[in-house]
Length: 260
Image (tube, rainbow, N blue to C red; front, side, top):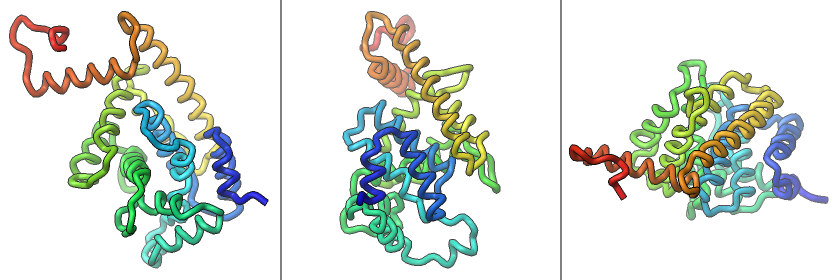
C-alpha cells in the first residue's frame, strides 16, 4: 500500500495536491488553510518565473506541509516543546524521508539542524513574507512593498538566505506587471485576504482566477516587447536600469535608452 507521502508526491497538479491536503486535514485535523495555500502559490510562482534550480514538486509539497502542526491559540503554543521532534515524527509517520523532514523543519531557524537544506531557505522566505501579506486579529496586512522592506531589513537582516536577493527581484517583476493599476502580487494578496481562512474551495476559485489573470498579463507584456525577446529578461534589465539610475542619475541630455 502506498504511503501518504508517495501519494501526494506522485501528484504533480497543484490543485489536486490541495484536494489531498484537504483530505488529510479532515482525517488528522492538521493546520491547513487559505494562508498556507497563498504562501505556496507565491513560492510556486517564484520557482517558475525565476527558474530556481530545485525540484518544484518536492518543494511545493513541503510548502503545503511544513507548518502542519501549527497551533494558533496562545495557551496551546506555550505548552509546545521540542516541536522539531514532533514535526519529524509526524512527517515520518506519513512516509516522508529525513531530507523532506529537514526541509520542512528548517523553515524556522530556531530549530537547529546539523545540515541545512537549501530548500529550507525557500520555505523561510514565503513563511516570513506571506505572513506579512495576511490580515491578522491585531493588525491589517502589510502592503507588498512594506512586506518586502521588512523582510530584507528586519526579519532576514544579516540572515544568510541564499534566495533573498532573487526573491526581491521576483517581487519587483510581479509588481511591475499591473492589472487594474495593481501589481500582480498585490492583486493576489487582496483577493486571497477576502477569502475566509478555512474556505479551501474559495481559495481554489481564486487560484484559478489568478492563473488566468497572470497568463493573460504575461502574454500582453510579451506582445509589447520590441523585436521579441524574453519577457522576464527584459523586465530584469529594466529593474537593473532603474537601480543604476537611483545610484547615479542621468546627466542632462541623456535618456535611459543610452544605458547599455
